[in-house]
Amino acid sequence: MRYINLPGGKTFQPGQLFFPAGSEAETQQFAHLQKGFAEQYEKVFPDKLAPRTVVILPSLTLDQDILSKIKGVVHYEERMLCLLMLLRMPLTRIIYISSMPIEDTIVDYYLHLLPGITSHHARKRLAMISCYDASVKSLTEKVLDRPRLIARIKELIPDEHSAHLTCYNITPFEKTLAVSLGIPLFGTDPDKYYEGSKSGGRKTFRESGVPFPDGYEDLHSKEDICNALYQLKQTHPELHKAVVKVNDGFSGDGNAIYTYTSDRQGWVTAEAIAATLDDHFKPVSPEVSHQLFFEKFTGMGGIVEVFLEGEIKTSPSVQCLITPAGKVEILSTHDQLLGGEDGQIFLGAVFPANPGYNQSLAAAGEKIAKVLIKKGVIGRFAIDFISILQEDGVWKHYAIEINLRKGGTTHPFLLLQFLTDGVYDALSGTYHTASGNQRFYMASDNVSSSKYIGLTPDDLIDISIYHELMYDGAAQEGVMFHLVGALSEFGKLGLVAVGSSPERAKALYDRTIEILDYECS
Image (cartoon, rainbow, N blue to C red; front, top):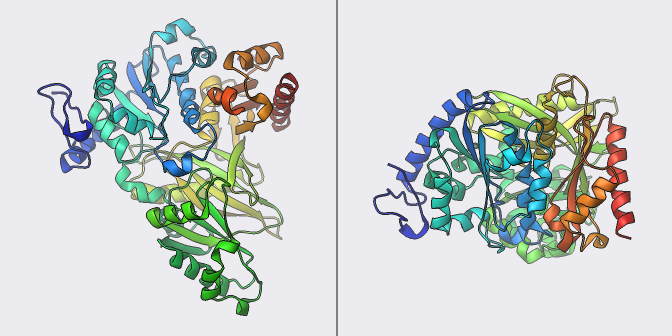
């Protein structure tokens, strides 16, 4: 018997069993599917010739009011096109779901990167599915609203026991869809959602023994914020700024900065903070108003913590994997490129992280991951840090948040890994291709200019070919683009510049920007 779970209590075909969303029956069926995934991960994943079906759901199932403020956010669904590289395995099928159809030029661009496989062979094993819906609703909700679309996806899965669903992030909506399709999810049960929140992260850091900023979690009101700001100033009289974060922010757009009016402890009271909060409180995103921020904070909850200062300060991250068997793998380390007035907005990353600390950074990430194993986390996730160089020349790492989802560093690393068949060694802090050569990259999700508006995907490909920017599989160097669908309307795209040295990667990145500016001037 095959199962389908549709919104509104409807069944698409007579005789199919229905699990109401959020019900105990759905939870039991999900647990059953996840048990099967552990065996699939052990037997199917390592075998490159094993038949399998991967359903890719790049839904940003996050707060839609905040996401709607991000320019071209619907095109962020294209970031998971890097997983089309899985088609290099000759018996792998992919079903890629999106809100709106993705241009053939963009799909062809990824398929041409495939090593050892013709694009024709890959195309036969790829199904691109669209909801034809550009609304702000999350992609997963759009799919759940379309029972016939769910039935089409099910028909494209030849064997449920060798299929799984991979998502950008996992919420109860993705859980419902997995049960509807009768296939497991590669990721953490959304019942564990709290562990990836800002509040849950602080508790995990505390348990792991890894340093993290002084502050307060599980706050739910303006009054809570004011009291926490007051208590921080009492504890740290020299404090200039504090960070306020909603529990489920995205790329820094759920953050705000509070600036204290005086460095003297005696001049600050809880009442004074409350009376002047709006005057000294600034959401990081210029598109998020005070009213919207506090509405989201009240609904989601959040934290208040010290804004870490340092003469030499960086923002690295560690990408981890917890297997269904409970094994921790350190996948990569990055130095994040942050922008905005207070350096809170994620713009891009450099890989690997600074060789002066990437080994100790990975060790801190592993400590945190081992605590998360006990809390039921599996799959890919990232841990963000602030690293400050101490007077003795030693870097001190402060954990600041856990992202139980794929992030801005996931797709660049997956592209590099798929194209070079390499591995990152956390003990040495280096990445080596299958042929033993080191590789580095500089990547960004936010290459943006009003001059690029009107540039089509075909134009971008033409420019790349003419100026020899395309990734060269023989040299294992060059540039790869993503978010290409956002280019013509928003003048925005992402790129990954891979080089044989950090300097070479940066030179390729800078040259690409210069060429785009020149061609669009």
